[in-house]
Image 1: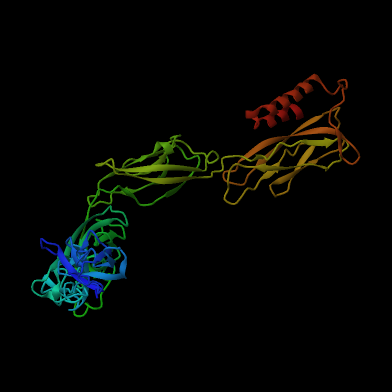
Image 2: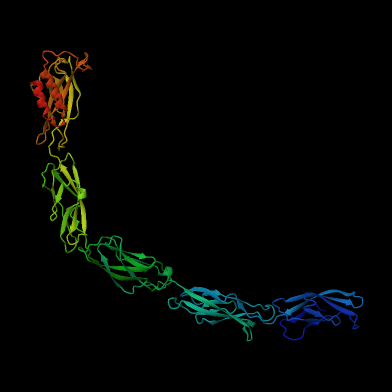
Length: 585
């Protein structure tokens, strides 16, 4: 029977290694039987003596390459080459020897465990592999041990699990550990093979350390010109933790009306900022208390520890050269029109807010006073007129006054000055429009021919009140004041004739009721027209008629002169007088 043969691997002898012997009960020792071998490695790796049936291995075998070979044996009649028995299959199994040491997948492993972990906390598991046969002997039975890393860590001898072995390991004291783990076969017995690996273990941070100020008193200097929201200084507390566990927030105990503190998330510093404008001349020193605490707390470590700290901050305000400041902004000043040049308008005042109160001079920005209507005293800020003001030309004048420190011309401040020109009754009322007035030839006495109104460029406080009148001796027309700033022109007679006179010039005197009273004479031109029985105008062109005895050359000249006077722009005040002399003398 030859179902299975066994052969040790890694044979180191000089001769072929004997495997075993095949024998058939058909073989009676007469030399008539021939043994033939086929299958895995037959004829090359395994040779058989065809007469005796002895099998030898020709080469050194490695179980880790191939653990078993399957072959077939034949028994033939040497003379006829006929099979004496059917083929028989058998195996050659390679017996393992301990020729492979345990191997880890990596030369170095990385692991972490929280600091302050309890003893026995699992850190990592590292396992090795042994290529030897696990089912045969102890060649692949591994035992783990720790060669370096005690007393901080231990390893489970069976599964390679690394655990903490020392309580209270503090990251702030020691953060990194190098642990060497050994795996040894043969169940750890003497003579077994071994392999090692290194495990780099890092203690991860937990929030077990509160923030602390190294110095519990800080001094900060702030320039008084710092804008609101600007930073004036930084303070820093120390926290040996890292990352989120080291994040802090700062606050002013009880708050403060002038300063605030915010946390710089990048540097974990407290940044002191301005909440209200500083004034060196008003208050120069401030003091307040700052609290710092962790943003995130770990409930496991707050017992018995005060996770807050306090420091005193003293702020000293530094003086800067500030520009002058006006007592008002803006200034609104009133002045009457027609005030003579050199008259007083008003006063502006500015002073240097600094402690030494440097002298200030005043000037007018001439870009805002192109007509040079005003002047200012450079010493006392008194504004006067350079020219008479006319409200009808401009009701407001907006100028800029500049205050400059005499010792430092770069320090300037400007303020708007709005000058309102108050009205003086210096303009007479006049017709509101040019009237196209006519009278019918067949008109009757007392007939309304025109309603007139007036305008006045002045602006009285209680509104306009105009009075209309004409010469009481005018035989043709009369005026009736309606007492609502309008008046009616009525005829004093009937029966006008274009033949006798086609145009009448009626001087109307218009007066206001302000002080001093102003009046003017405006001339109303009345045309004589032909009308129907209902008073509707038909034509106003006089017929071409020979001169009558009553219309002399002198009268025609007078009429023409009246027209010329009316067309003259700048003598309208005196024209009615001249017209009256020529037309009604």
